[in-house]
Structure formats: C-alpha cells, structure tokens
Length: 510
Image 1: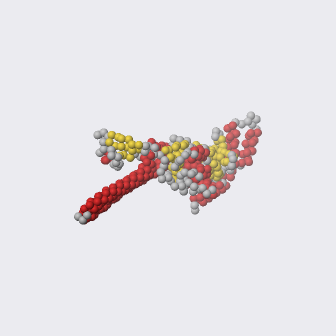
Image 2: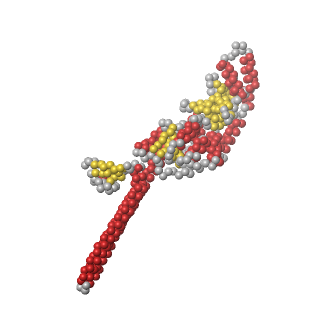
Image 3: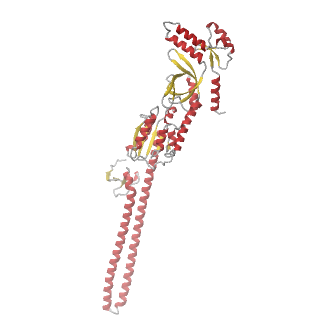
C-alpha cells in the first residue's frame, strides 16, 4: 500500500474515532473514573477516555451539550450585573468542549508561521476564495520537533506561509488567547500533492502555449561579454558569484549588470518579474543569470509561479539558474536553458567558457602565424627558382651566340663583326627584358605575399588585440612567445590594437 493510501486510511479512521472523549467528572468521583480507565489531560484540566475506548462505563459523565448550553444561558439570565469576562470565556470553553470534543481533519492555508520557540510553533491559518480571505484562526503545535521533522522529510520543505496543509486539530478556548486550534498531526501527503498539482498545472499551461521549450532549447553562447545577474540584495550567494566575476570585469573581459529582487514572500513574484523585464531591456546581453544562495528549501515554492516561468520561456537570451539547491528544483530550473545549481557554479561556467574561447583564439593566431611563415618560405623558394632559371637561360643563350659568332668570324669578318654587334645588341635587349621580367615577377610575388599577410593578420590579430590581448615583440619586431625569450631582451615592444609601446627592461626585472 502506498504512503498516500496509508495517510488517507489514517485520516478517515481518525475522523470516525476521536482521539479523546472528554468527561464531566466531579472531584469526588475522580478515583472511580480513573479506575474505569479515564485519564487526566493537564492542558484541558479534564478527564477523558482514550481513543478507541469503550464509552459505556462512562455514560454518566458524558457531556450533554444541550444541558450545558441551557446552564450557560440560565447563568447569564440570572446575573443582573452580568458575569466576568473570565467566567464568560469559561462558559464558552465548556460549550466548545461539549460541542466539539473530537479532533478533525481541517484543510487550510498557512498565512503566518512563528517558530521562535524551540518546541512550540504558532500558526495563523486562513481560507481564501478567488478574491478574498473568508476565514482565519490561530493555531498552535506543542512539542513540534518530531511532527515538523517528519513533515520536512516527506515534503522536502518546512512549514511556510502560502502553503496548503491538512491538519488534525481540536478546538480550544483559552482565557487569554481566545479560540484557537491545537494541531495534533499534519498530513504531508496532502501538501506534497498540492505542490505537485500546482507544478503540473504550470507545466500543462506552458505546453498548451507551446513555449515550455522556448529557453531550454537555446544554445549557450560560445563566449560571454555582457551578462545580467538577478539575486536577492546582500545575499551570500551573490558574494560567491562576484568573487569569480570581479576579475573578469576588472580586466574588461566580461561586463556584469546586477539587479536585485525579492525571492521569498508574497512580493517575490512581482519583484522577480520586474527584475527579469529590466534585465531583458538591457542591450546586447549574452545571458541572464538568476542566482540565490543556499537557504531553507521551504522558500523555493515562492518561485513556482506561472508568470515567472512564462517570462523565462519567452526570454530571447539564454537563462542560467543557480538557486542553491540541486535536489529540489523549481519550475524556473525546469524551463531555463542551463541549471548550474549554485551561484559559484554559474560564474564557473561563464569563466570556463571564456577561457576556452581565449584558448581557441590563441591557437587560431598561432595557426595563422604558421601559415604566413610557410607562405613566405614558399615564396622565397619560388623566387629563387625563377632567378636560377633566368640565369641558366641567359648563360645558354650567351654561349650559343658566342659559338655562332666564332664560326662565322673567319669567313666573313665584316659580316661577323656586324653579326656580333647585332647579337650583342640583341643580347643586351634580351638581358634587360629577362631582368625586367624577373623583377616584375619578383615584385608581384612579394606584393601577393604582403597582401595575403595583411589579409590574414586583418582577420584575426586586430580583433584579438581589441579584446584586450597584447602582442609582445622584440626589437626586430619578431613575436616573443615565452617568458624565457622575453627575459633575454633588454627592449620589448608591446603591440595593442591602437599602436605599439616600446618598453625597456632593467637588468633585475623578472
């Protein structure tokens, strides 16, 4: 049998069989009543029959409600000067005790909880319709530790305002505190059911509106530059978050916008809604973080509101929650893009994402630099090949021309001389053309290399420098890639996105 079934069976049995039946026993008859099995209630100062006891032997002491009411009326009528307030309350107490001797299972909503005493809890219970409060009464739990511990284990929450409860209670009238309920038991299954039904109703509404996956299916950004943070004012969890966020903000790596809101109590819903709308109105946000440090789990139910869940589902940016509890999540955690658990884990997620992005940027820069160097080496080699080819061709042409001149020199001296002159002129022109062609190709290759270098550097280095990184060069403008190389230089040049800054190192600089 399930726990809910056991609880339901227990409630129905308790309703049919009252825990106690109080008796009207005169002082002279107390020993006889005690012998028959009656017991003394020190709080009520009255003898009673325990739950399930046979009432037949105690028939002469059983209360007569009608008689008590008549006696009270006669007492009031026969007192021309009236009766004292204490006597009136005593008569009311007798009437209540006679009319309502049993304990009853009562459904109510907690309006206020006061547990400033270790073993006693005072409550204010109310009933509301759609628009207003229609009933209220004060209540007390004596020796509350065991009852509240059992309730907390079953529900995961302590007693809190705005919580629906089902209590086994008896009515009492006190001289100073008036009419109130004394609670003997609380049914945790009822409260769990109400909470679960409320959450399920919110889920169904979001599903019907087709927005339940609106935020949790959004991808987290690859990098964080601007993040809005909503938290209670002065919360310990906010301090944990800022311990990791302040260094990022100090070095202009990521900017954080902090907004405060109330996270528990009747004003929590409207306060959080206002904070969410204010955050989403900020420009160029990468994410919204909603954080709250550890606290009573009973405070979480204030966050289970349809309007809050709907606002997160419709958020155009990813929402990250760190509300302080991982086991007991709220509806906000269910619909958010990412559930980090605690404020510290939220800022750890943001910091780790930024570190990964910076590492990828560094790797991209190194890859670009390697490509540039490889292209330059290939261009130098190609120019050398072209130059060598030109030299070989020129030498071959000269040799062939000399052979032709020498062969014809002996036969036709003048013509040979003329031919030599022509050949030399042609050689000169050819040499000049070859030289001009070589310089032309060399210049075009160099220009293409510089163009590619500017294009590559323009795509990655400048943007990286604008993010706050600095490129360190030696005096010959070569990149310095390690501390050991930097230590060997007496002069370094720091390259920022807006220019270079020479730095002279002292002999003892670290």
